[in-house]
Image 1 (tube, rainbow, N blue to C red):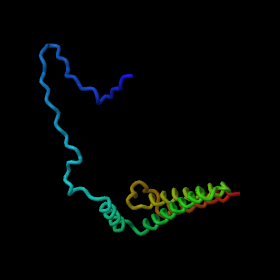
Image 2: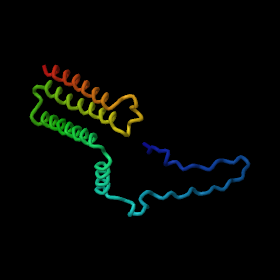
Image 3: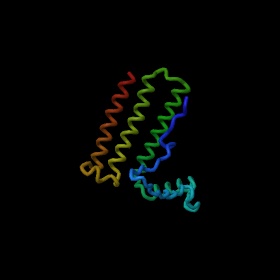
Image 4: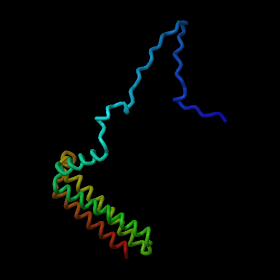
Length: 153
């Protein structure tokens, strides 16, 4: 079986001139690779992470930090529930599904609250005040937990 040819394997042929004279072609300019940049401009991953953390601490309001801590807590709880289900077992499967769904649902609702109350997104949510966003968050949380409790039986 013959090897398949890719589009990059085909060398372009010069256009055929019907008058019989050939036209000279100019070579394409050589493009320098991204690795040829100076090493002074490259930062280590640790320096980038430290710079991001410093910017987060300086520029993020206290309310957003509180929401972020709660979201991190929800991620930890979800991971712990999943690990427990894998190691110990999921005998009352409804309880696992209910708890994990509550964790994921609360994370989604909290992310929505964070997006709606962030000052940088004010242009997108002009008609929604932070108080209204929080009221929607509380109402959505109550409905979510009502369904999760009823799912347990």
